[in-house]
Length: 79
Image (cartoon, helix red, strand yellow):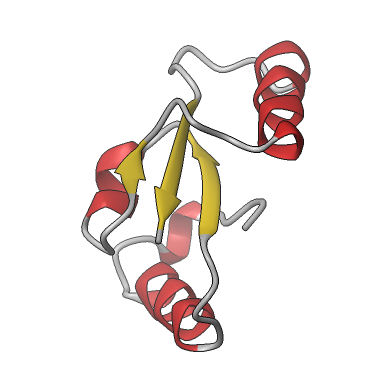
């Protein structure tokens, strides 16, 4: 799962929740996310992890270097 964002005018309307629920219903495989809002993904069962595949590690580096935000990027997994 790469990027999920909802335009400010549509936040808190349930769109993000429905998108994530739909994605989760489509697979039984392990899913990783890189997020600045881990508490959002924890409600779906994701857990913060440091055990990540190389591709997720590269995503963390990319996000941290290229997508500068004040929040810390966190890797999460849903098994």
